[in-house]
Length: 379
Ligand code: SF4
Image 1 (tube, rainbow, N blue to C red):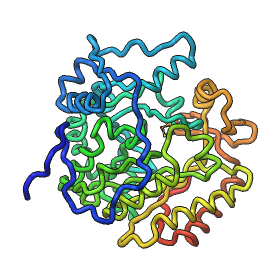
Image 2 (image 1 turned 180 degrees about the horizontal axis):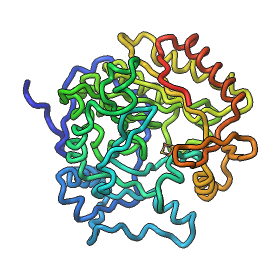
Image 3 (image 1 turned 45 degrees about the horizontal axis):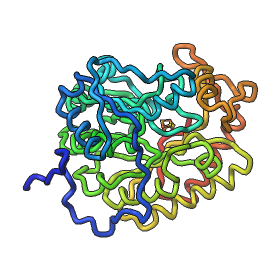
Image 4 (image 1 turned 180 degrees about the vertical axis):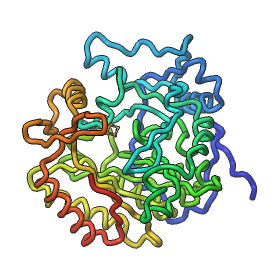
């Protein structure tokens, strides 16, 4: 097989016949950072240099830092710091702690990171309270080393490796815990390398990520071997249109899901965060009908759903109220139940009766409206 051609940045570009998989009429939304910086250590890595070249080819200047510390992202006020950090991308080497993988039930056996931070502005953002410091998007230059290090974890884990229902997935690796891959792929090319890495792997493995973006052009036609499951995070219109600033529309996400499914990728829905807003049955019913239309007629469709209700911690609430003082997200401790984690940390979730009502509705309606969809878990 002749090698695939490379584009200017050294990335492989797809060669397969893409008939029927044409991009949608509305191109997907793409983030343009205001400031891009690179540390000297990052530029020692070939992938760090590839990212810098890709960014420069897009007409964005890359500031070469003198030291490996990121400076100049704090403003006079919290708001200014937030705005500056959110529009900054830093090309860095991953922190050593990130190279020791953590289990990530119920989604996957292991999590690994190719970046940290996200340019979108979801008012319930999962990163709030998990990451410390100003929310700069850091993309990792040592991607090749990170991918090579995953081999130590195959055949181990607690989710798919031990589950009869998901055993066919092999050892699963989640790559979107601290970021949104499709928000950054046009700037990094990192997740494409990951797709090809997993496709070429001899052991049974699966790469997984979830996204609220829709830029899948460079994934269509890639040799993926069915080893990558891309899930699109979707929500009903009152949530997606009012609380998910900077993301692609749900219609664009579902069009992207269809394109990947037609290209043979296993795909999925992350319906999250589920919120019992006024008229939620109607709103979520419309969403499920949109999903059904998006997957209609896809041959060999492999579609899963992960159903995640809204929750918050005291720490995430405080950060989110700082970032979004006029948020529309309900974070009222008094109307929630407390749930304790392994180390005693508290989370606020919906009370048991609300959870039961939501779960019963979603499981029934998904089966009725989108029959090919397999629910992986509810939480
Ligand atoms: Fe946070 Fe995900 Fe929204 Fe990005 S897309 S702001 S990571 S919730």
